[in-house]
Image (tube, rainbow, N blue to C red; front, side):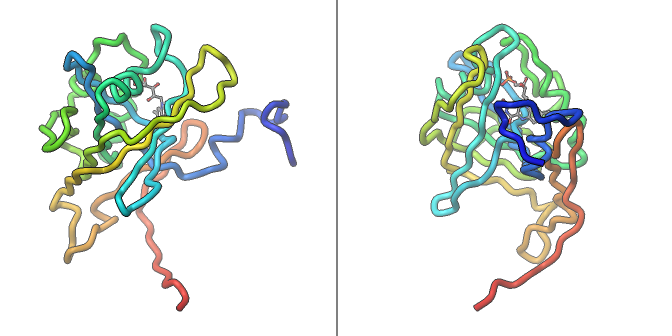
Length: 203
Ligand SMILES: Cc1cc2nc3c(=O)[nH]c(=O)nc-3n(C[C@H](O)[C@H](O)[C@H](O)COP(=O)(O)O)c2cc1C
């Protein structure tokens, strides 16, 4: 089959989010200018460079109360965020933090997650997450909007501090069988990294 996204696809559900998969989940903590903590998951998220390390996340859609989602407003206002990597064990709490809630709700506290202080930025880390990336905003890009009411902005951040729990390190290497990060598939589906294969590059 072939379709242009501006036209009907003819399937039961929009397939797009099931096609570019799996998408890692950036579980992003941020603070507002007046210090209110926010936490939300973003699967339009990835690392795009390592010299220096750079990540991006895409905020697509509006807040319950209209305008930008809290994460986007906070990150653009303060220039800082933390990416917490979500593991299988934390899946339910991650999902709880995606609820559309009034602006003053701290989703980290709501989900019963302990904060841990960051070293170089103001937003706290999710203590239970074995990997936390402290980030400083490099730039943000406003992308085309299908609907003028649905903001669509991608934020690039330089990773300036990295926390790794000793629990996921074996012989100086990140041990995926201990880490078990989850990633987003389409619909209501997720996957967990529990199978690894190794392949050397030629040359
Ligand atoms: C696994 C998962 C991935 C998500 N990915 C995105 C995303 O990439 N972009 C986005 O705008 N919203 C995404 N959402 C929805 C946001 O998490 C949700 O709108 C949240 O309420 C935003 O919170 P905030 O207003 O506190 O920033 C995702 C939700 C889940 C459960």
